[in-house]
Image (tube, rainbow, N blue to C red):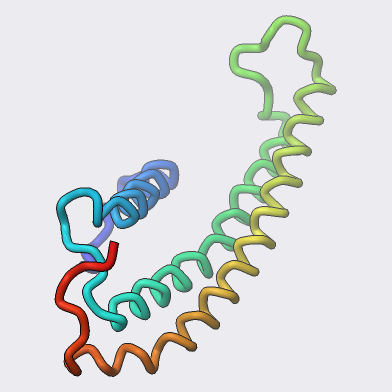
Length: 139
């Protein structure tokens, strides 16, 4: 599953693809594909989600830092400018977005920690995969 990522994809495209893959994973039982068949798969899924969420804070921090540098360089403005928007409105909007990204980053770090703990807790359950576990998906 670890296929090389084409180097020409934008960050926005990559994150959109990741969101689509998560959507598909969540829709799997209803989409005609098998759902979770073994507790080992549940443990693996939670472990993968822990790894995914552990990467979110860094990406969110990078977006926040980018917005800060763009604002400092005077390159942030409405596109196109709505009637009545002032430079102050643009500055306030950019500041609000940076604050929201900061909070999202902290929340993602907490989520990653909780998922990592859950993955650790679930890990021993995966050992019984071949010990007569369920053979039909849990939905």
